Amino acid sequence: MNDGQRFYGKYDTQSVLEKCKGFLKNCCGENDQVDLRPIHATDNGHGNAASLLYIYVAWSFIAMDKFFAAEELLLDGWDTFNAIQSQFGCKVYKGQLANGLVIFYEQVLGDIGTATRWALLTHADDALVQHDKYGEGTQKLRYRFGMSKEALDDFNEIIHDNILYQRINDWNQPNRFADDQLVRFVLRYPQHAHLFAHPTSTLEIPPCIPYLT
Image (tube, rainbow, N blue to C red):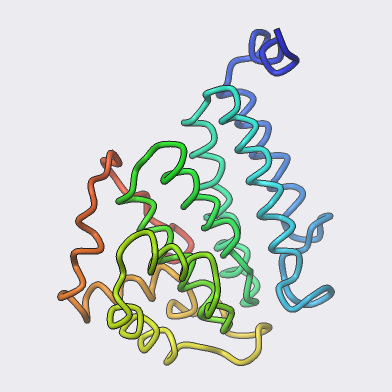
């Protein structure tokens, strides 16, 4: 029996999950060790490093077949990052975290439908800061999930109108969120609806509360 099995033999998964969520939020929140805002560090703050923290912990859950805990942790990270962006009005980099969800749904659960949605969000988050040309979301959309060049160009046309060339102010507006770009794309280009027709086992797509708020 390995350490992880002994650990889960002593504590129930939900309690461990809640402690992990609290720990990561404390690390990545306001005035804490990992500042996600692009003010004191790189152009993306420490968003990439914080994303990898969430992904590392999620993969620890996956290694012990606790898939629901991994999913909840990654989704909670997405909401946390968006909440910080909404609060401070600074761009918080979320592409790496969204790509973690792509990998989780595609490779762990085999859920291509939900993986495609997260690839679209990965691309949108990257494209809002012009980091999309060779991004993971772009590559997955084109060569794994069947997005045509025409559809990608249409998506980029929508996103281009909402690009800011600095990352410090005004990122709490609705059109600065990847979720908003996806909604605009769905509504403006129904001819690309086949991208959302992949089989999925997800019964309900959780809303991004900070964006909706």
